[in-house]
Image (cartoon, rainbow, N blue to C red):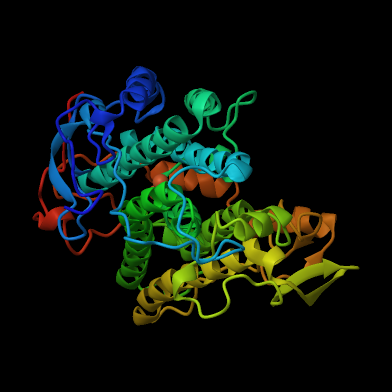
Length: 482
Ligand SMILES: [Fe+2]
Ligand SMILES: [Fe+2]
């Protein structure tokens, strides 16, 4: 068997990293484990801890059969440590070490940088579980409830993956970081999570779908960039996480689509063609398209901030070092060193936008962000097809990249959703019309009522076309124990 295909599934921590033969790391993880379970019970899904949930568990890393589905109580979920199989003779794919054999140990000079990247990635995983912990009590169906919990347990597993790397490769400092990952809390005043978007509330299910569509997709982009890493254990970890992440994208993408489907269906039935007849549409008990647009505006802009400054020496250093690559680095055709290359950056200078060619190395955050925007747009196109087919004259769109930003080139200005720069007074007036306001939140909250009958769905969301694991429509995805 190639390295990485041997799974030890019977111990406390299922793994394919040879934990049995590594007493030091096994001990460290077994010591960390009770704190993790405490965290899960404290900050994981509220209620449902004794319910049987039909969950997918990763049991291997073979692309053809890596998971199995079964009923499991969430606290008993097997959070394993699984790395994608090693690529034989893999070489560092980019940066100044390009072509050298990948590292199996942390290079001393990049230790701090790697630890920081792994910790930041690790911090986002439990953060999203914390953000989503109240949603179970208002799930629109058992199908959706299961999907929420699936995402939650897998984010928990992603935390495990990062903690494994910290324990295995970063000694005392790694152990301290692993402890801190259990101590920070999303939205906490004194000990918040590390990144802004992960301290925002996820108050309702439309927010959850938007979060999994937009913010989990940032996670996907970051994992893609780290999957290119010359530090091979990180690359292999991220490659396997990406197989799970695909489902999170699906939950968001199909979730928003089902909301749109239900809205236009109700509008058609009621003979409403004007999408801006918000009062009329809300009387039908569905979410009007302009409010869906506002949610897009909010989640997209919050998530863009996660990519950091457009022009960044940290990003350049991480690339040069061979630690963090570009999206699909291995598919790109250039010198993979970018010493001479330039990249166009939209900047805000003197009250105006200009496009400036800057050294490509320093624009890597922006480049990843641009790839992300493209990825987002494919979802928007699919949602618009649903609206178009219903004959409704309304299209969803991503707002301008300068809209509602708090980090980077546009942090100091306000724009409308088209990117027109406006002053503070105009922004104050505009906000209610382009971002969800209290009335929108109250209306959405009024729709959030749990539906727990198998096969039934809340009135504001359409049923999915197929079940999870090909189960029939009335399958009992969660056997709820109060
Ligand atoms: Fe994750
Ligand atoms: Fe995710």
